[in-house]
Length: 181
Image 1 (cartoon, one colour):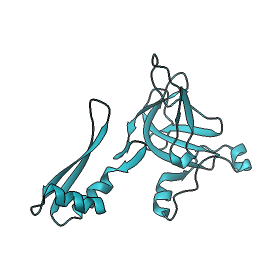
Image 2: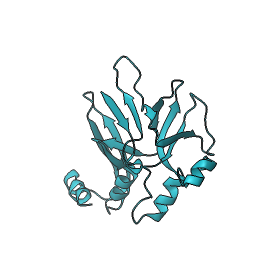
Image 3: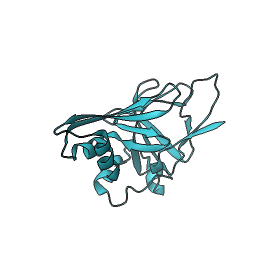
Image 4: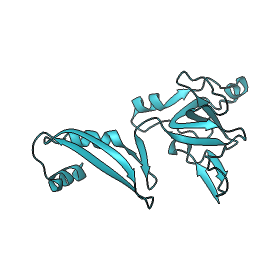
């Protein structure tokens, strides 16, 4: 069994690993038409074993987000590691800032550590917890909101909303209001 890692912004697959239950699970190794960089907050490459954010560049990289120029500027950056040859060929110009915290392993595989934001995945869907919190707070009866991901013992994932009321609100009213958003 093979597992393929890749955010949508990299046309889905960027790394591949063979899954072996006897070995540590990793994101795998980067495909030949991509480049991967594990960088610190100053965009300095980190050595094997050091945890940093994964940046991906290469042929399958998206141009950005449709009608979202601010998000595109935030997530897609000029590649400071583009070689002269790549520049001449017009390749590997930009990098995608994945938000995934990783580290290089000595064998060239990339180990996933976690996220550097409040994005979670449930059933393959990206969910921004902050967006749900903002929707909750927009209700006149809600003063504060926190959304947390909990994983059940059977592996199922659940979102829990913790609300501080401004005015009295029932669970049914809250669900009706928030589900419409």
